[in-house]
Image (spheres, rainbow, N blue to C red):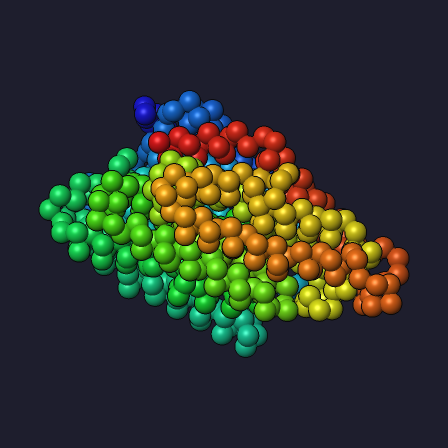
Length: 487
């Protein structure tokens, strides 16, 4: 794979920061939000300008500073990073549009602060996507934690402060307490923190040492929400819905899953991990998380909390693909980064639209709401199909690849767990759809004329629902990038 020395990765990483001075100095909401859109479009343009070369097998590289010998602050754009960056940059534009409708309709306070930290979070996210080594990725990972804290605690009440403490305590505590020591030991053993195809040379390390380092990293990157490092995620649902969308689809949880994929493929390497059998640790934790999280989701009446536990389960699909460590499993896991993103952000957009239009947060109070909000609930149905993994949505393709990865490895128990989890997905989503559309007329809590949320809320959720379906028919870009990274 040939490399292109270029400043483009730095420009893409820095693009979200260009919005912040304009947001802070804007005298009207329209100008403030225009800065967000301008930066989002700039980011997408820079990312897409590199995509053809990356799809052609090339990488973009740039070294900024030699922080440590063989561990510089550096960027590299490859297939996996490009896949993640396309998802993040696309969804930032759509989420910016949705945020206007939601934040204005809800008359949220401190909107300038909201848009400022939103841009900072995207800066950190693209930094993670384009990191060339573990040190650079760790730095941007931590920056993301601190830039999203003000978003989680946006309401500044007791509940949000409590959630914020849990959020920072778990994700920062785990990264400092687990990932940082593991990085130090890894650097001591190998003399480098560079991402290397097939993993860095660990010939001098014992299998026990490798297993411990691997365990520290997969649990230390707690944004991936593998149990028992998941509790921050449901707690963070006190934030406004655009923040929840950012956490669950655009940035935070996908950064955690992305870090797991990097650790497996480019830090330790598939052959090393399979030789000592620690891949079974990751697949076991992933399978347990996907089943337990789905069972907990069944019991949640709060719509956002049900979606939160669904996200925990869905992230474990990506971890499962990483743990299978074969071409189909890794490809399916990476594709699920994109497929889950568009499906889940649709569902969160719908939850926010329901709240804006009706003030409802609880599923038990949504009987008959499909007749009042038909466009929103139609999009909710499409998003649900994608998360369940039913055609014609993109979620079917990533789950199909994961199932093939299980069968290729002869892992029938994991294949069964995947199927059971998908059935549980249906069990906690389809009753919401039934309650919304097919309840008896007399039981409807929401009746009367159609009254959707503002168009700025409804149009984005229809767009993401449409993309979820389009990805079933045209998955080539994400499939090719994932296959390139897996091979």
